[in-house]
Structure formats: C-alpha cells, structure tokens
Amino acid sequence: MKSFHFPPTPGFCPYIDRFWGWEGEPNEIVPLPMLLPGTGAELYFHYGEPFRYQIAGNDPVQAEPGHLFCIRKLPINLLPARNIGFIAVRFKIGALQRFTNIPAKDLSDSRFSVSEIWGATGNTLLRHFSCADNNRQRLSLIQDFLARCLRQESADVLIEQALPFLYRQYSELTIEALSEKLHLGRRQLERRWMAYSGHTPKETSGLSRFQHTVRTLMLEPSANMACVAFSNGYYDQAHFIHDFQRRTGLSPRQYIQAARNKSHFYNTALQKTGIVCAP
Image 1 (cartoon, one colour):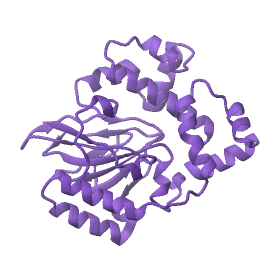
Image 2 (cartoon, one colour):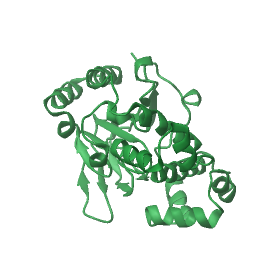
Image 3 (cartoon, one colour):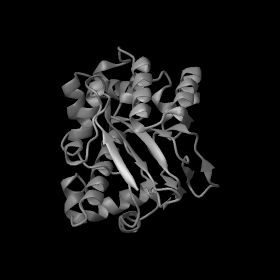
Image 4 (cartoon, one colour):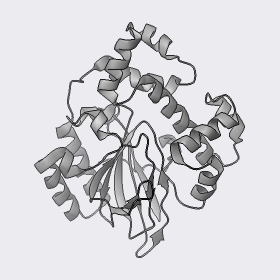
C-alpha cells in the first residue's frame, strides 16, 4: 500500500491541513484503524472500495463514496478493506464551517454523505470524481469544488480565530485566561463557542490534549507514556489512562499495541512527508 500527501494551495492554508490518501495493491487486504475522538474533521472521497465501519459494537455500515467523519465522542472502528483507494481532506479545527451551512453541533458524531451536505453540487462532484483517471485529476476536482463552497465571511471570526489558539495552547491556557484574552465574559464565551463549534471551550481543550498525546505516542514508538502524558497537561499517567478509557473503552496500551500492528491515520508534519505538489 502507498500513501500520499498534497499540501493545500495558499487559499486553503487557513482552513485545510492537507489532502492525503492511501491506495492499496490490487486485492490487497488492508487492516484499518479505530478512529479516535479529536477536534478536526475529515472528508473522504473513495475511488476504491469505501470504508465499512462499526460504532459501539453495532452492525457494520458501508460508507458512501464521499462522506464526512467529525468524531468528538464516539470512536469509529474501520474494518479491514480490499482494493482501498481514497483522497481525504483534513480540515483544521473550526474550519469546516467555512464550507457548509450545517451547524457544527449537527455535524459532530454524525456521518454525513457528500450528497447530504452539498446536495446536487456534491452529486456532480462525485460523478466527475468517479470518472477521473488519476489522483491529480481527482485532487483538482476536489479543490475546485471546495473553492466554490468556501464562504468568505465567518459566522464568528473571533471564535474561529480562538479555536486554533486554544488547540495549540491547551496545556497552558485556562478558560478564564482565554475569556480575558478575548474580552468576553465566561458565559458569553461558552455560548458563542458552543454555537460556532458544537462543544464548549473546556471540551475543546480536553480533546486537544487527548489528540496531541495519542498522536505523539503513535508517531514516536520509543516515547515514554507517562512523560508524554505529563508534558501534554495530564496530571500523571493514571489521569491519561482514565481519560483514554472514558473516551474509547480501551486502555492506551490496548489501543496502541493494536494500532501499531495496523496502519493508522496519524500523519507526520508535512515537511517530513513525501509531498506531491498540488496541481
């Protein structure tokens, strides 16, 4: 199986971390990971077999050829797949709202198809995508589509700008300090934050801490769990283990041992990956 990464063009840099994907060899069965809660959103376009997945032990579900995962509380267990091939759009925290009118609270922990989010224009994209010959053509179609969907004005510029700030400073910044920095009362901050993002500042901070800790452990196999947890704002290793179990139903070691025997979706920084320039 091969993986690939495309950096966003300048106009997308404030909103999109990267375009990326996987492509399996013919009839190769790829063991896929459990997707954990986080702060971002991922839009998948499949030119191979779409994902089959389970949530909370329920019956497997077949994903649509184009679909969105926006995971906040419910992990998604992807089942092994044959003939895999997809391009994904990794949105930065809070950025998805620039591309859709659907409220963030309705997108969180829901699985929407491209057609459900964007209607006829989404269907047109999927038809053209299915006829594309290669990933450069596919990426060009996706970028043209997103450029047409991009809203030039934010519903709340202040909160939109504060979300990535808290995402980076989660281990140092209290909600009280954030309120003061934004010149908002705490209740007003929480109301506007919830209206824009679908969750509270405290939940954003907790998800950011969790996401950064797990990402480090997955990308640095020799890292000490207790040290990583402490450096990311957990009181100690026990605090991280409790938080991990609460969010996933597994211990960190159970998840990490299983995930390291599979492929995972934690990507290294763009400057460290093999980059294919976007058309």
